[in-house]
Image 1 (tube, rainbow, N blue to C red):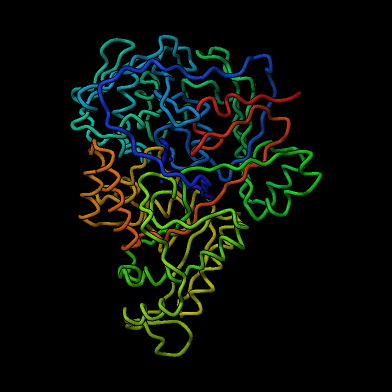
Image 2: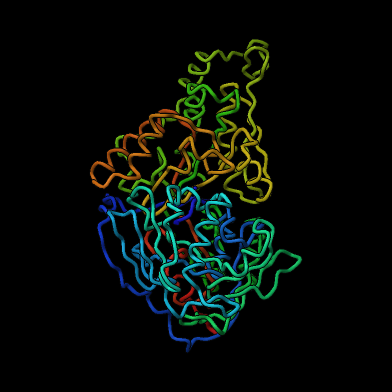
Length: 542
């Protein structure tokens, strides 16, 4: 799992487009002077936007973020070096222009001389170098894998507004990694980096208040260096429960909220709801899956993991839970990404075959209590889900019933966001239902490479396959698009065979937006957020 950032999120997304994309072309020496699209005129100035978060924000340290909720808040507090436009093309942000040299080993960024932090200090090249070093030193879960191979000795500030970033070897998708916020050295070098509560960014908003109820109120800063966004304040409200969030939408206490497909199906034709809100389909580069902790003795045998996959009734999930607004996935790439191997099909639902595989792995019901056992140990698993998300629970219950029929006991355990992520990132779990969002240029290295074991990396399942490692290593530096696609196709096939995840579906994500919120646009692959101007271009009717 997000740069797009690798993040754990509650609901994945579906892209309806059926065309195949092509991989990013080889990086060649180039100079970019593309400018960010201007935000709408300040004529629509003012107002407070109220947005739902699905969990609590644990940190606002930009480099230590781990959840989509944290990313949502931080995106208003920090501007990245490079942003994405609605077509997922890198565009200027803190860096006004850049050059890619030495076949992709060297990147020279020329900072916008207007760029400043919220305390009024200018953004300097030394701040970029400080941030990159902290990515490595703090072992940033989100960003460290993207900057592996950084040549720290040669990465330096050329002058106050020019930074030279050097890597030991080129990587095709490296430019996308610079969708990274810049942290001020004059603040964070003096603080305990992991524990500081200070938030000083170069984005358009600052924190006005953090409430005891975990709300976060942002206020637009007058000294922002780019064109000011129209909305004056943004209030983030953590609401885990979908039913509570729906009532908040009805009352107008929340302007923007994710809505699961079950709720959407029930309320989409409600005249009162239609009068107040509109619904948007958002198609991101993500998928739902169940993580198997491969350190768990019950799950070390690939036959067992395949049997569990055969017990997942994907079509029922698509039809009953998502009302047809989802499609099957078979591996770590979404169906429309060029890296996806179309010849790899999802493991079909087949309880008879699943039972046979478990028998071949030595599991039998010797005491006739309905639960398989082996060497005196029952086949009983605990599946973690996020509390408050009804679809996640329904999803898990469908699998639970199928497994019961073949003698596997599955306990479903709902946890709040903080407890859930702590257990997953520490690999202190058996199974967990999550979703991942891929990068625009996908790189599954941090999820599956053996060097990226959690908690230092995002390989939270403990997957270790030398053949897969080699394919990921090669794909990261392969300059030929056709060859790179072939490497990922091979990787897709291996991962589908080994089943470190049970890949389930890609879901059409629904967002409810109060009709007073104007100029809401959707970007291909990123949806409402994570691109420029995105929500910074929204404005509010009085």
